[in-house]
Length: 418
Image (cartoon, rainbow, N blue to C red; front, side, top):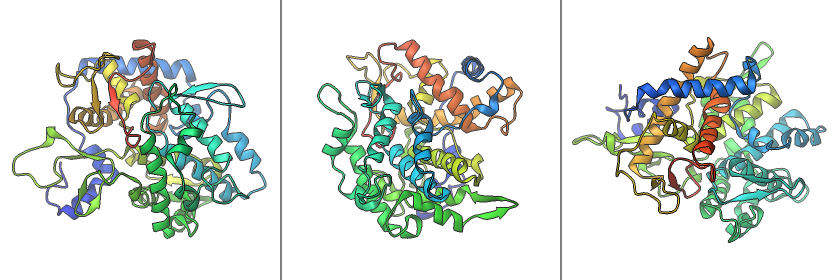
């Protein structure tokens, strides 16, 4: 049911920036149901290969995994902060996770980061994460020379495209997609935190959200419980100024990762009735921050069932590569080099692909649990994303396109969506 049909534009804008709206508005595309079992079988095979039946060992989907490509990097960092109280250590970890997640939009198949200390050449999300953790520890995001391991508004304010390019080792032979967009996100993050001292403190640090979350929490027994709604408020409202000004606005409210979809367009409908919300990067940050809070502080985030699967090219690529979703002939032009369909992230076909991904991730998670005789408590959505669909999307891409390992479509990215 479309619960937004009778709302004013202002109320509809508020609704489109909620998590339930992501699922309610994503009933868009037909799919090939006979292929769904193949996806389940493929994903179950990966889970059993990597974890056997030790499902409790499956970590949640989050930025933490990417930092530890090839070797651990987060645990040694936490160990170096052993003299700090747990809350300050968690603040620093959130500082890192937020800024790194904002830098995590696809870098393109031709970019790689070479880590000086290990000599590792690391690509894609793991390369971006590794570069960003070294930027963090060297004080790139901090205005305090005495404390490099923090992110603050003053430190981000002066970030330049040239500085980002230097630290990401970008040059003619190592190009990165969306360099300007990534830089703009960090500068906008500075402004967003300055404008919301209640959420980010007077010095504008992402980690200061812990103070606000603590004020919204309650203690049950020996555990502090934080409602997911409070964390979502910090990220969807507090970080709203981060997103490009070109994004959709409804009732005077910028919507963020919300897009018009031609499949929903009808005559006589109200403004916003054809919009589909995703909030991919915001949810990616949310998953990552939850893990930091629960791991370091042992607080419990309550209400995570509202979180959705992430509509990005690994999860969506899994569906397309295994034939659950297919493009109609001639819908998109073919890139002359890669021979793959090519489109901007704003194209209606990409919007529908992302919408289908959100819905199908729910279906796949249920199917995997049914196959393994597990409940959502035994295997939650964040674990499914980490152990099966995101990893599966990468593995099938490598099988289908061994030279690039890229997605089944060429996405023209500005560094602020995928």
